[in-house]
Image 1 (cartoon, rainbow, N blue to C red):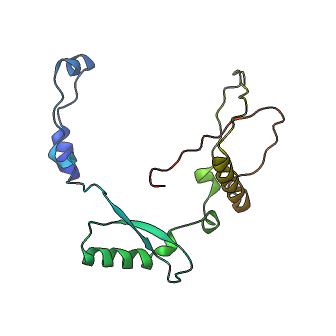
Image 2 (image 1 turned 45 degrees about the vertical axis):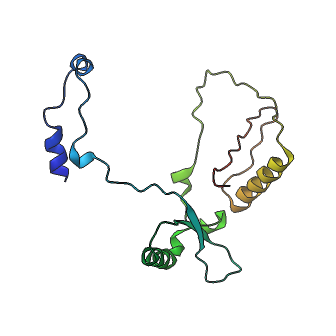
Length: 158
């Protein structure tokens, strides 16, 4: 397949001027998307053997019973690869996901005014912050006057 893609792309390089004059060609067949099923309606399935413990995953409602049974058994077999809480992500290397802000040294900092949130959102924000602090994903830093507001984003599925 790789050779097919390489052959399909041979001789297609051109100058930027020539590219603007020619209409775009369709992608080679090897690069065309197969018929990708749209997820559609989803159904929650608990991967835990204990009904009191929730380890939900979403599977398509359009799977055949055989496909659904096979998928659930496969997910249960490898459920240790999933994490449902921050505490379950113990082996996560901080160098992989550690974020730093690359701020230009000459840039002048801008202080934001504190944003007020809906009381329900405030509760959820605080719960999430405490979970992240408890699991060691974030740590407190001291900035006496500077403030960067968080931007909570609600998930489409609730």
